[in-house]
Amino acid sequence: MTTPRQASEERDASAPRPRGGAAFLLAQVGAHAAGRFAERVGHLGLTPPDVGLLRMIAGQPGRSQRSLATDLGVVPSRVVTLIDNLDHKGLVERRRSTEDRRHHALHLSAEGHRVLDEVRQLASAHEDDICAALDRDQRAQLTALLELVVGQQGLTPGVHPGYGQLSRKRHP
Amino acid sequence: MTTPRQASEERDASAPRPRGGAAFLLAQVGAHAAGRFAERVGHLGLTPPDVGLLRMIAGQPGRSQRSLATDLGVVPSRVVTLIDNLDHKGLVERRRSTEDRRHHALHLSAEGHRVLDEVRQLASAHEDDICAALDRDQRAQLTALLELVVGQQGLTPGVHPGYGQLSRKRHP
DNA sequence: TATTGTTATACTCTATAACTATA
DNA sequence: TATAGTTATAGAGTATAACAATA
Image (cartoon, rainbow over all chains, first blue to last red; front, side):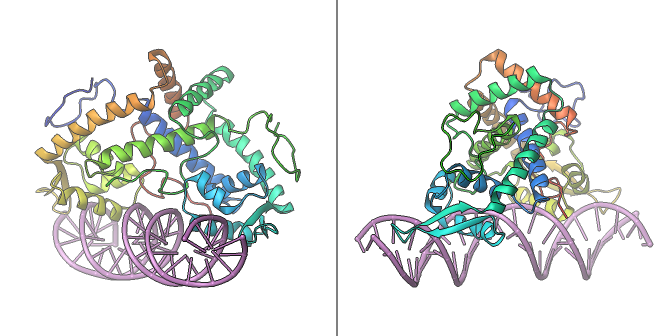
């Protein structure tokens, strides 16, 4: 399938497909989309991991740092750092659990909810930006195809695999 | 459009779409695909940036480090490190240009060509793996949609925007 | 003086390991 | 003894800045 073209010099400009297949395109467009999103939320003083944590805490208030670490496929100390940031910014609160005093129950502050709402608007604009080349039907098609891949590849819906290096399994 | 759900506790399990739209799916699947690819080429002792450089040098033998830096949107010192690795592994050669002795003309060694062929086979398997959920038509559909996005977003075909931090523009 | 490549250095991100406090 | 969280430390990756050789 791939053109042999061995040690011959200078690329043949009329070669069939120098760009790469669907997998490469996915990685390329995905990295671009992630970068653009990082740029946008950066204006709010947030990183993409920050946003993910805000979403997860909002979706399940009171959860522990340990549970976040497990779901994200990340080491607990990593969560400490991440939550520290959000804590110092006054977006999340750590409340010592009264039942088991080892746990920190995580909650969004009022400001945290406000910022998360801003993020949602911005995410909607981001969505329109990235999909500007596609009409309504094409956008739905793309979404459906990607959801097929997500399901088959065993990805957790709604969880971005870019929080730590545990997610990209290591090679020996 | 987004459900208001403010400080109310516990997510509503029947909520419309907790997962995210096409942009998020792209970032999610893209990061996954990139991670899996990194894992595969890792078995050959290579990183994804390494592979990109090998491809670019193979496609245009004799090019300079400076031109690579420009095309990748990366600082020249970064290219030094990258090429150092490939050089030490015996995959690329730096040949002092006879016309302008400031330039290093980059070429793949025989071993470099051999390894790049291995990478191509492995990339084909990777492609099949990532797209395992899709039939032939769906795969072509996905590719076509992604190519539309690549064009409209001003991405350089065949260049992955993940080489440095210059590609993901910084926020002030 | 401008350009190619290099070195030295610092900064950011993330993991590992040792530690504290609860249980 | 086991678990949630923390701190201290180290490594990888990448940028910035100063520098050498050549033009």
